[in-house]
Length: 547
Image (cartoon, rainbow, N blue to C red; front, side, top):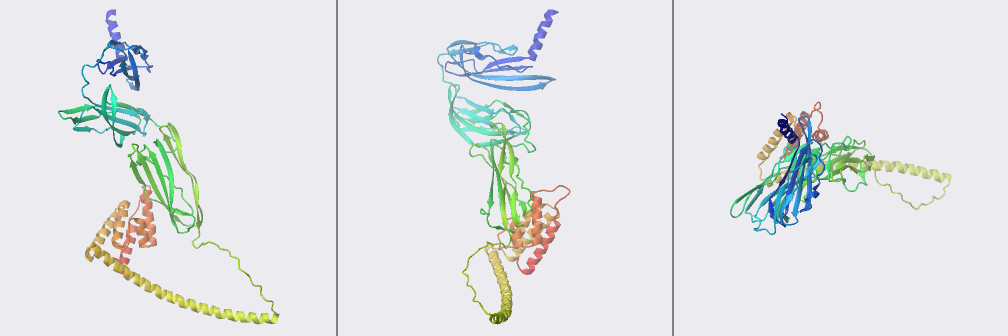
């Protein structure tokens, strides 16, 4: 009975703790480097093995460790893998002794070393992948390198793109070509780099990257090993959404550039730009401007861009805020702060724009100019002379008042006549421009009116279903046919050309719902803007504005 229990006990111990050692080849030349992989899984964290037992016969060139832990059947298991690159110190059959890892010891191996290689190393194709760092934060960049090693002429070479569920992958720049010595062999190398963004915490394993190609004589196939990495929950950044990058800058610009002579009714544009390295553009937040007492704020749609030309993912988010100055005085802008995590220094950072202000003058304000004039002292007069003079001045003043009143009436009448004449000439000029425009595009009048009708019908359908995105698009299309002599590219141009206060209000309400969507209990309704467009359309037709 005792003899039976002993083998069973040894089997249980082997299932609980496993240590293995492998070599990538069993023999090689004295100058050739080979790899030793030592792997162990135990129930306790594994200490670093003592590799000094190898230094008698081998030179240790590199030692890379990967550790992960997992939970199975109510028990934690710790798995560690050490990859060593070794170079033999002398020829012969060299013994690789067993290496102790915690409570286990690996088996011993024999590696045969010859003085010179009897044959040249065969031409090989290798695909090697690596991830740095292999332990990082979720929604943070990890760099994947895919290298194709070859030492022969290739007539075709294709590498599959990396794909992994739950991981956003961005290609970084073009491929790099260079030479490298690996395992004593000179290779040509093609390297492609990627940025990996694990979406949630967890352990991941990237599937092998496959090479499919051919040389002059035969097809060639190779693949890399799967590479493992881990993402952990990111630290808290206060109340802000998590954002990590290797660099991040926040900047602003103004239009017009000179803000010294602003008046009520002027429009200025403040542009805020976030530039981040190794962060996707769609993850960048939108800087917000607090409500202003002296100005109305109209945020525009954000503009996103990404570039990888330099081998780094450079993302930009640009947001323009149109400011209508409504009241004289100082318009203050609070400081803008953007917290983010520096994944290079592994510490929180904060990009900041300081507080600023602009001064707004009243609508009719102008510079005050003070001048000094030479004064002539009056000649002293007697009382009788003074009374006569006063009477003459009063009579002269009354006569001059009637004269100026008459001149004002004449000027007003002339101005009214001139204004009416100018409007008539302007309308004739506009109609002539429209005719020339139609002739230029080779459109017949009935075809042109048909296009306007079709555009209005599309706009009506969009308004009926309360689709503010389509309304904005079709409204610009309709306006181009309604005012063909004007350059219309967006809703702001429509507002200026229409010159209708009610439409101006409705357009700004439309922009507000476009760029700052309201809650479900406050949906946008398209009937008001459709009614106003219908009125404008009738007015334009009656005035002969349309072609």
